[in-house]
Image: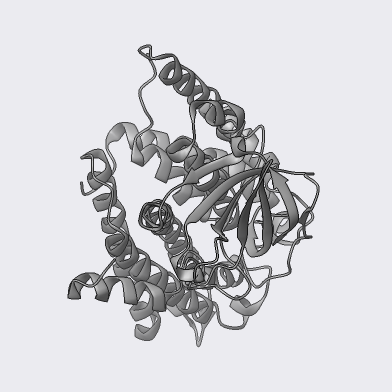
Length: 396
């Protein structure tokens, strides 16, 4: 695949029209934290019938009957990520965390009853989800350094622990909480446990939104559990260490691959804004686009756009062909896309000069947002490690 098909191009134009009319005018309010992102997300789902079609497909699968609605293709999922990221990568993060990570974990690992209980409302955005794995002392070593625990008792389980930097944490209705069985073994040898929690449970505290550098339209916060008692009906995955780790790594791979779509949208917007500015801004009696140093910056942005677009097309072909990328492949894609986005965003600010440093120009926001791609979902350094271990045959 070298470009979107005619049908997908038409779909992209519809998404872009929605983003331009419904999201772009709210960008500043979202950036200032004066507006929740969930309203825009729900209007998008309603306008394109995404929630209802997801519900219909789910119910048909559960009933074991044929469904006239085709499954959404990878491209149909990724194109909105690209277009939304042009103005608000934070909304993509909030939406992905709720649907792809939280609902996705339940759909992959839950019982039929658990799927009916939580997944439908998440898939339709009736409820908002948070996928809680990162802890204050275990950022990049999310699984190995995990301290959150589950202890069995006569009535079920007692959960304790603190999660931080969790997308949607302040507002989440449903939380997928990942911890380890406290059975006396060394922490790194313990089974991984996954539970589904609901807002308002005794002992569950969802902290206020954190102040952060970028992705300000995506609420991020802390979740603390103090002797939260749950029944086995909330146990989503009880597997040995290898199986539990495999499921979590599969989620990481999905999350990292989606960064490519976000990166493409941000790079496209930086490039378009820079070309427009270079064509109209005049210095020394010329438009700055006449100067070769500015031309070099624009050319490098275009090279990055082409390369990241090709990564996205390759990902679509893999998925449509029935194969998900391995964790190492997804890590390589994320590493390149994140670094390219950061480089492009910095160059865009430089093209704008002093104006690029001002918040009224969107390149300032995109530059702050770009940095997040090199950190969340695994830092650049972690991506390097995963790629290298795979090449050396030591990936576990």
